[in-house]
Image: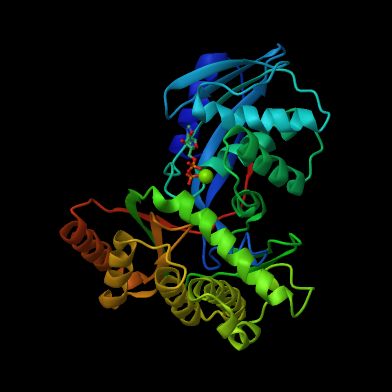
Length: 385
Ligand code: ADP
Ligand code: MG
């Protein structure tokens, strides 16, 4: 057991004086496939070696006693009248309980201490880890018989209804279904998935955290969704089977360019090409050809910057530094945009050099401190022995 896990376990034993079940739930990255989820396309996520750890046990009462180790905060929640709390962090857990109850299952009280090392709000999905880890833990403690996909879906609903974030399903799916050294090609329409090998021989995955989050993100997100829908409406006239940009080939879109408003065209072009890039990246992974995946990642970034227009100067600066460093075979903004992290596939022999260049360059150009995470791909939510 690692130090962090021991700390959480000791905190639990100190607070509740019994042995807990220990569960770990990871954060995630997404290699390629951005803004494709709500267009019913594909994404390519994987869980990482940053996680939230839960120590949990039944307490035989009608009260849940929940302790956040990192925030040094706690809350008691009555088991039979679940509602939103004034503590933001607790709502992710309460939301999970509420969803399980909605499925007709009764839960008596649990004692739980949790904490972890996924940076909060950096786009690595600490919120999904919180939900899937707690759902997984409750499933074990009470023998609820929930399947993996049920855990994924109820966690997503917890985020919708108790955190008020209408997220897609990728984050929770990756947190639960990931496997070591593999990435998941997830079909966001059917939820079918396929694992592809992601062997990092000679490379590191380095995340560069801009530490900014521009407020444009949510309004622009809604605008993009509408722009995509209006593109679909144009093409549907030619083929009623077209339900989303997922059903549109790049060639079909190019043919009808003149019927589009130029902005809507650019948005749709990005999405249909992004779905194609993801498919190409999966083929490259089957050949263990990371160089091709890296090139596609750069193309994704330029598309997000110039066509989908969801990047920002901080992200562009980092991708530019990566490209010029000669150390990075692929770099792009990860997540919705307007801040968060870039994901970089870096030649291992040059990782330290790159981190140094990026840290100094970012500070010089933005005045901001760069946070850097070196991550590897790990299995999904599981019991810690
Ligand atoms: P992201 O999922 O990108 O990390 P979100 O804003 O969706 O960012 O979720 C972050 C929220 O999740 C935090 O504000 C906090 O309420 C909760 N959270 C995540 N990790 C922890 C943790 N280790 N301890 C307590 N709360 C956490
Ligand atoms: Mg989140």
